[in-house]
Image (cartoon, rainbow, N blue to C red; front, top):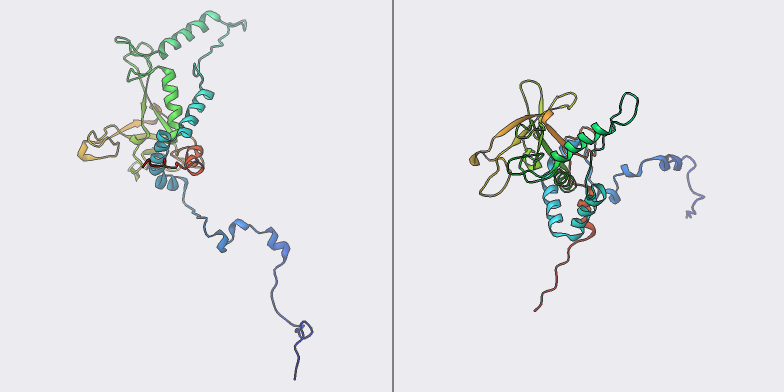
Length: 274
């Protein structure tokens, strides 16, 4: 009859492996594959790969949120007030004379021309906006709203032959830059989500814009049946404003604040009056 009394019967030559607590403490907890971390998805796709798969849906939900959620709409209004204010971004010249004194005459003249260019177009005098509907302050607000709501803004610079200043701007919806246009051209350039770039440096060369929308369904989706066609616009004539969250990112997505509004403040349906 033998009695097993632990730990007196424990073999001295046990080969049981133990983990050095110091090594375990130095490891990355976020890299563990236990059940506690299975909920978190991980991907090694490029920045453009992630943006391409999510941008359309993010943009739709962000627009719906701004349209129907008072908090999101208020956020857009506050950003416009705090960044642009009542007068927007103004030009203040500080040209100097050879003796380093301010040239007030030249500065006032340039600022006066700038104010004249930024006003709303008249019947015979189109100014900054190619459509003739906005002042330059309105253009600034439209661009800021588009960046916060859609994640990017596209401005088309015209040579402005219709006004004496030689420059007009045209605001284009980011939907016109087709996210599904991805190909390799014969000249070696790569088109990523509608933007033609140098393959090695990602330098933008041109923008392939869908300049026709579907009048029946009111959408910018490229449709040959609706007469859609791409217009290749050189990058020198396009100002593409967006925030890049990752390196080599070609398109921008809605701001994190607009994305998180719906999670933090879900809309609760009003009770039905029966």
